[in-house]
Length: 240
Image (tube, rainbow, N blue to C red; front, side):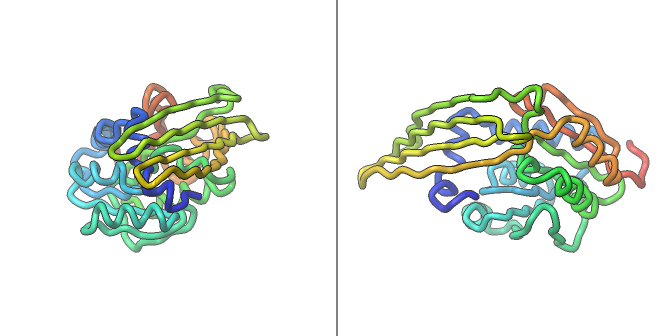
C-alpha cells in the first residue's frame, strides 16, 4: 500500500481536494482536552506523511508518530526531522512509553479485519496512561456507504498537473476503491494506480472493541467529513 509515487503527492492531492489538516487537528485536540484538560503528549498512529502530525506538533508539547509504510514515513521524516517517528504496524507496535492521547485519523483502522481491530484497540490502550484519550476516525458504516461512488479532480499544485479519478464499490463486507492518477510536468506524464480495501465495520463493532480494550466510548456523528469520530477515555482514572 502507498508506493513512493503516491507518497510524494499525497498531501497536495488531499489538501487541494479540500482536506483541512489544520482545522481537523485543532478540532480533535479540542475534543481530547475537553476530556483531559492539560493533555500534553500525543501519539499519531498511521501518521502517513505527517499531514495531521505537523499540526498536532504545534498544539502539544510532545508528539510521536507510527506508520507502517516506509515510503510515507520517509516523507514524514523529511518534513519533521526532530520528531520521533517509528515504523510499525498499528496492531502490534510497542514504542515503550505512554501518552495522554492516541489518535488514528483518515479511517486507517478500517484497513484490517474485525479481529485485528480488537487487537489494535488493545494496542492503543497500552500506549495510553489511565485517563488518557483515544480518537479514532472510522470509515463509512454499511448503511452510509455509497456503492459505485465516483470522484474526479484535476489539481494544479505547483509546476505539475495531477488528474485523479476514483471508483468505489462494495466487495462483500468491505469497500474497494480503485484510484487512477496521471501526473504531468515539463518532463512528461506518468500514470499509476492505487487500490484500497476498507472494511465496512458497523458502529457497534467499533464501540464494542473500544469497551473491550478498556475505554469508555462516545461517537460524534457530524465530524470528519461526515464519517464521524469515536472518542474513548481509558479506564483507571476519573474523568475530569
